[in-house]
Each structure stands twice: as structure tokens, then as C-alpha cells.
Length: 447
Image 1 (cartoon, rainbow, N blue to C red):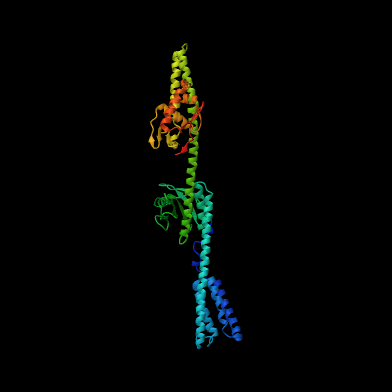
Image 2 (spheres, rainbow, N blue to C red):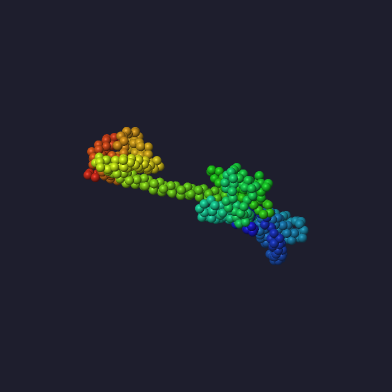
């Protein structure tokens, strides 16, 4: 892999030496200019203004080189003033007590000024470092937001980590057998030893690899991507020269980046689970609709066929064996349809509630005010048909065909007796009457 410049510094610039030959030469030139100009000023207006000429080199040293070079420059400025402008000149001796005070004040001002400027520069560079670091993390997070699955997240993470830390990078996952999810450019495989160390990092949730632990046979360092449930994956980093890919303050940056990877992986898994739940709900809804259609459309027709067969048997004149066979198969098919109609997925639904009454079609129980209500089979069958079509008006003939069969669709008295019993047991408001049409259950509410 070609060497790449990191997007963010690994250490604050204020913590690294800044004094260069160029900066040292510039300071010497400033000292020389201050001395020359000081001689010209001293000849015209005395030595008092010359003190100020030695402060710019101190400020420049603090800005360019840091604290200790600035302190040394302040001492050098004091010695230069003493050497060139106090009596006796061209020596470091001082005869006049007033000059002692002047030199001491110059040294004090130089030291204080250098400290203040150095502190300001230090704070400025720290602010710039943290801004760059935050920008790196934000850019990394934005790239991860565009990913929809684990592999895409691993590809982006490996590519970004390789760029940020100027090293080889990869992402691995899987327990107990670790596998390569994605690698940056030039990384397409890992050795068995590499995968073994990666598995160690995943299992223990701690970094492992070269220069860390357990990595004598690998060039990689593996850092786990941790979440509440454990290590979701591990990021592998390595340098071609064998040096540690991340150290010092860069470790905290790596930790922040891996936290972003963990959030992205968790988000992807939650979105995947959400999509699966949507598909399951849609499938269950379709299945419920199909089963409802079986119960409301096919079952009455089977009852009609059975009633026609019974009429043929009573009338005679037809082949009895054939009628018996058809009647048996019709009965079996009716049983299958009844079983399918009962599988209406109500086990995945809440009980239907009408006021204080709760109707659980799956468990075939009815509660009123928290107390169980005993219903006869026909009463429950009528209530179940009304509950499955809650809010819809079901005609007398439909309810009679569905509960008693087509042979009894004209026996309205059967239905009225059952509804009257239900109203006594559940309350008058549960089943509403539509005169000359039929009945309906009051609009349901979630329990």
C-alpha cells in the first residue's frame, strides 16, 4: 500500500519540538538588528528605549519554538542588553545599581512574556488539534451513515482507518472462527496466525497483536469494536516497517472511531431486524386475510354442498355409494377448512376488547371485568364470527350458515336465542342490532 498522510495529527503540535535551524537563524538576525538599532537609538535618546527592542525576539521564539526556547531567548536578550548597553560595555559586569534593576526587569518581563505567549500558542494548537480530531470523527461517522449492512460498514471503516493512520487496515468478525470482513487497498487475506490473534481480541474484548499481547506470529494489532453485547468486530492495523501503527494520544482517537463503527453496526442490525419484522407482519396480515376468506367464503359453500347431498340422499334415485363417498370427502374437507379458519394468527394479536369484555379468539376465552364468562359452543361461535368482523354488520343468514350450517339459515330463532344469552352474560352494549338485517360487535379497541 502506498504511504498516505493521516487526516488528523496523532499528537498535539504543542507537544512536539518546533525549534528549527530556520527559526534559530531568524532569532539571531532579530538579535543583530535589535543591537544595531539599539546603538543608533542610544546615541540619540539614551538607553531606556533600547530595552523594548529585545522583546520582539522573545515573542518570536515563543511563537515559533515553544516554552523552553522562549525562556532561553529571554535570558539571551538580558545578557545581550547587559553586554552591549550597560557600563562597563562589552562585559557582563554591572557597576550602576540602576542598571541592575533595569536588567532584572528586562529578564522578568521577558520570562513572563514568553510564558504568556507560549501558553496562548499551546492553547491555540490544542484547540486546532481537537477541531481537526472532531472533524475526522464527524467525517468518519458520515461515511458510515451511508452503509446499509455489516460488509459495507467494514469496507468503509477499513478504508478510512488506513487513511487516517497511514497504515494497512482491515475488519474481522465472527466467533469462535474469525473471518476477514473487508480490507483496505492491498489487504485481501489474513494468515491463520492473524485470524487466531483476531479471534483472541474478539473473545476477550481486549486489544491483541504485535507489541501488545499474543502477537509474536503476526504483524497486526487487533482492536475490538465493543458494544453492550460484547465485541461485534475487530479492527486490524499494521505498518509495513513493523512499527506500532497507533500509539500515544492516537489511541484515544482510534477508540472514538471504533465507537462510531460499533454504533453503525448496531444501527445496521436494528434496521435489518426492523425490515424483517415488517416483512413478517405483512406476511401474517396476508395469511390472516386468506384464512378469513376461507372461513367466510369457502366454508358456507361446503355447507351448501353437504346440504345438497343430504337432500339427494333423502330423495333417492341416485347412486348411494357415490353420494356416501362425496358426503364423506365433503365432511373431511369441511373439517380441514374449519381447522384452517381457526388459524387466524390471533395468537400474535391482543384480545379484542369491547368495554369491560375481552375476547381472546386464540385461547377461546371471554373475560368480563377480569372474570371468565362461560359460553356454550354455539354462543362462542356466534361471538367469534362477530369478533372476527368487529364493526361490520353480519346478516342473519350469514351467521346461521357459519354457525349452524346452510340447513338452518332460515331458523332466525336459533340466532336470537344465542344473541339474547350473550347479551345477558356480556352486557347489552356488546352486540348491536341492525333491524331486519343482522348484528355487529361494537368497534374494538386495543386492550
